[in-house]
Amino acid sequence: MTAAVGDSQTILQTFLPTPQGAAIKFSCGSKFGVVFSLSTHLLTMSKVLVSDPIDQAGIDILSQVAQVDVKTGLPQEELIRIMPDYDALMIRSGTQVTKEIIEAGKQLKIIGRAGVGVDNVDVPAATRQGIVVVNSPEGNTIAAAEHALAMMLSLSRYIPDANASVTSGNWDRKSFMGVEVYKKTLGIVGLGKIGSHVATVARAMGMKLLAYDPFISNDRAEQLGCRLVDLDLLFREADFITLHIPKTPETANMINAETLAKMKPTVRIINCARGGIIDEAALAEAIASGKIGGAALDVFSKEPLGESPLLHLGKAAVLTPHLGASTAEAQVNVSIDVAEQIRDVLLGLPARSAVNIPGLYPDAIEKLRPYLRLAETLGNMVGQLAGGRIESLNIRMEGDLASVDSKPLVVAALKGLLYPALRERVNYVNAGIEAKERGIRVIETRDAAIRDYAGSLHLEAKGSLGDHSVTGALLGNDEIRITAVNEFPVNVPPTQNMLFTLHRDMPGIIGKIGSLLGSFNVNIASMQVGRKIVRGDAVMVLSLDDPLPEGILAEITKVQGIRDAYTVTL
Ligand SMILES: NC(=O)C1=CN([C@@H]2O[C@H](COP(=O)(O)OP(=O)(O)OC[C@H]3O[C@@H](n4cnc5c(N)ncnc54)[C@H](O)[C@@H]3O)[C@@H](O)[C@H]2O)C=CC1
Ligand SMILES: O=C(O)CCC(=O)C(=O)O
Image 1: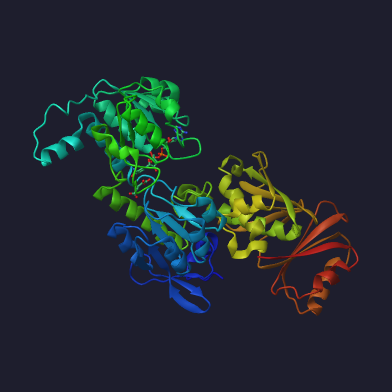
Image 2: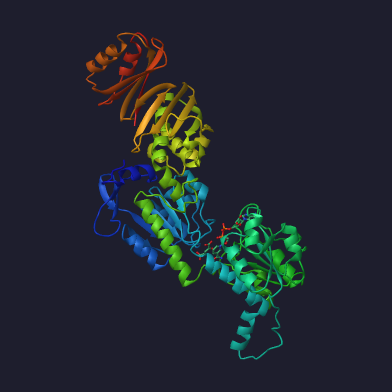
């Protein structure tokens, strides 16, 4: 059930994921008011669990709209136990959000990661359950880049060991002869946000820059003063190598015994990205045996690190406990960024940095919002017309829509298509995956030449009970119009209770349907017939004030000339 006050109604119906309850927006003087969940007839405030240390700035934002419980360092079993109470979970890198925790989150609508990497969240499990996962893609970029640079300089000048030596009462100037970074070659693996900032600063320090990133253009690399090369060449030529990539199946163990063997014996490796990108045993062995110069590591395969050969490498290794994002500024940034998104989702608004909603970025949403409603309505209608098992959904973007990013429209159409089967369990997060799991083939086509309306959408569902199509467009003020049903032209707004008939266009048929509905006390609000030729096949679309009583469809199909009849409830 979804209930809303004032203008938030549409937004809530459209965007609130898995609303086991309903969200109500109240105005109470603060910017957003308070969010309540209405479940089993009880009005309760939304609850957010913060399970890692998060800057107070974010907690203050969340407290305006929800009850916030800060409970850090909880064991998995305890998290699983308390998860059913919460609508949102906010974390840093400490909490491992496993499938079990997600499945326990029966009310959970959003997981907010106050940082970049979401590798501590089982995103596929969250997606499957329709839970939005958001992160803060830029809040700690500078902090992480500066940490990598600090690590590079610390390692090249042995600062941690020199400091330990002085604080132990020594004055040893011979043991800490370092190297300069000026005119040395820095190999940057991953030229995204953090890698780019590292490049900018390293260039200013007079370093020569090589970069490997298969998803970055030569132009962008050139702008940053980097030469894009293949990984092999980067490994062979770099004096320093710094990693700024996510951990993925492709990047796991990217630095291993074999790749280490290609590197200069003086090379120093910096990893402030993710543990597991380096084979730690192979790295420790390469440093201990003098095959490479050293390493500075902020991230590890297992955190906390515990016993490891990396602990016994003296000044050739600089280790920090995942501090890349640990600056006052970054923690405020990520906390606010993620708290705002959690607040928005609890209020039924879209999240700006959802990692598991395909193509639904704020700009796209704003531009497409009326068309998303259109796609969802048409999906819902065509699904109900087709009935049975849907084998494929063909979505044709027509007119102006032929040139827009179709992903959000496809997701919206699938959400509508699956709504009759899954009700509130389907949302923008899981519509794609739910369709795929049901074996529904999605075919997208475009036709800019169809110009009956500025932009229209045509959906055709092929299913076990037959094929049906609906076309729709928007009138000037964003009003939805159904403009064709099974290729028969009509012009009707969608309404809550609709009846469609496929029939032969012949005298008296409309009257018969009217009388029949009247005999069941069903009031007709409007009626329209679409036909291509006089006395040929036709479609009748009726808007009804009341839902059709049980059994009446069968009666309608007995009327002479009626081939089929369908109800659609929106
Ligand atoms: N130590 C810490 O506390 C922090 C660590 N990080 C980590 O730093 C890493 C980079 O973060 P951002 O720069 O914000 O991400 P980003 O997404 O802006 O950049 C990542 C880059 O890696 C590239 N890439 C992906 N797969 C690749 C592959 N197989 N080979 C080469 N390049 C590949 C992408 O094209 C992209 O340009 C992430 O793993 C993130 O989790 C981020 C913040 C703090
Ligand atoms: O939350 C943290 O301190 C870690 C940050 C991080 O690793 C990330 O943002 O990817």
